[in-house]
Image (cartoon, rainbow, N blue to C red; front, side):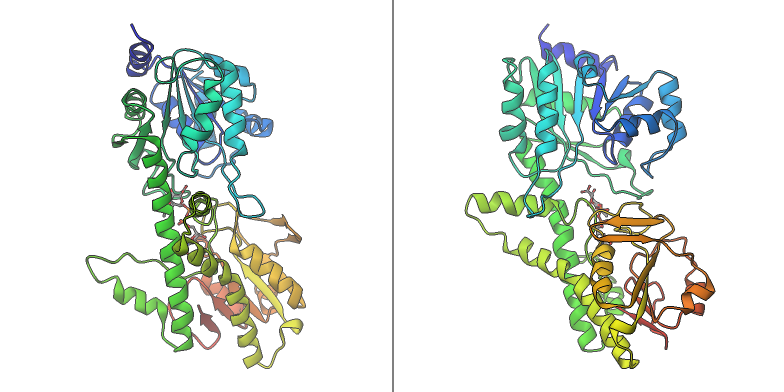
Length: 434
Ligand code: SAJ
């Protein structure tokens, strides 16, 4: 029996032991899904604090129920550890590590390289290695595979390699992991087949492609599609405001078209660890082969300009009220990168606060999910949202529109509101929208 047949059989009858490397917003839900499907799942994370939190039912990912995780641990279905030796016992290893940008906006694949080097130490026949972390086309073939081949084992014979992009939408209850079609692209039909059979145990819809590069690029197309369309609507918002046209009503009208249009909404900027980041992986790779991705570069520029635009709109509004920015007290409501998700990464609110901190008398924030900001040179404790406090501010800015905020209370007790998310659906004497 070949190693492929042996591994396929173990996957089919759920004897295969899985190890998810990286227990973040992608890896942890994936580990839980496989454990609930009847596999024994190791969870490897270099962050020992995360392992302790999992074993004591302390949440750190809003999309996962900590009690459910502890139950799986107690039933010996899920074994989180920060001891790399567990990799030796795994038949399937799924890499879900971060792929951020460096300060100079170039890809940082160091987490993938570290994971690959660690896996290589314990690589044995047969093992299926799947990369889920979003990266530029050819990462699987040019970065992951060469490191694994240093083990002297033969790919697609002793070990099998596949790319399957993570597509989770943080905070989205309508589309949980198990309802999002899984794309799989292996180095050969064997690895694709192994990955397809594995994912089908938790996700009914699996879409196979011919190679890792197609899977890598499909993911980047998805997120670049969002980046470009968000930039488009942000630019429309700036243009519409100059003509005193309600951009929100324009979008409501445009989306009545039953085909050929998909609504996106303007906002204070583009946050998160995916949309502002992943397309820059593509543009970086393109530049290295002499191709300039003009659309991505321009869209990134427009989205990155939005925090400045928000500050400009605040300044102009206060000038109309005969108040200078340097005398103003501003309250920012909502600082996470999108509503109802406890995540500050690339959040435009942080840049807005930093810009206002340099210009205003006082800048405070309130966010029901975040009580303290200590990022870059921001060091602030969130205020209590009370009637008295709201009245103290010359401008209250709705930056992130969390669902559980009492917007009527805010409207009643604020002198002036700048609503960047169309929470109030129309302008009022004391409310200005983007
Ligand atoms: N945003 C707008 N206008 C919009 C939509 C979003 O300004 O019309 C802003 C949000 O406020 C946020 C940023 O863009 O700051 C990103 O929001 P997002 O929901 O598009 O991105 P993520 O990173 O939370 O999740 C996305 C997923 N989103 C959706 O499909 C709706 C999906 O593309 C990926 O599964 C995920 O990135 C990923 O991991 O790549």
